[in-house]
Image (cartoon, rainbow, N blue to C red; front, side, top):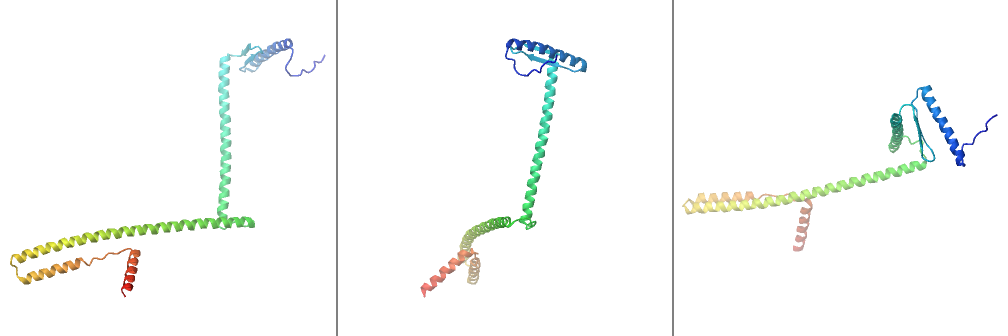
Length: 239
């Protein structure tokens, strides 16, 4: 007599369910033992009933089977992670290569090369892009030139101020020098030196004073122009 095919689904009747559990559990335990003996395999079987009762079988010891399972599972996870990481980097490399290809193609088009495959719209967009880039470059260049001019003007004014201070110091030294020569001259006159030597000495003092007053200063061009303009206006007013 041929047995009918059993539908694999939960058995609603609790008695039938318990009988089926006991039969199939015993058959599963038997198969596990046979597998361990016939194939020299390390087998571990753990079964919990619906009531929470534990049934287990191990061909060696349940502890060694569980430790071996954990170790094998960890190694398997490492292999999977390594494989996933390799796939990730392969995809990353492919993406970077595509980006590099696009950038090289865009660069060649900006240089006026490989334009045969572009449409009128693409060429128009490329032209606008080049005009915007050129405008930005010119703006930056003008800004740099303006900053450089301002820096040079500031340095010119600083040098002019330093020259003015030096000029004042030189004039002060000249005055001190004149006073010193005057005292020496007066002392010689008081001591009865002859008139000719005193006069010649006095002329020497005057020549040195005049020579020291020939110091000229270079002023910034814009200040010189303003002073020249002011002088012209004053002359016109006098006429």
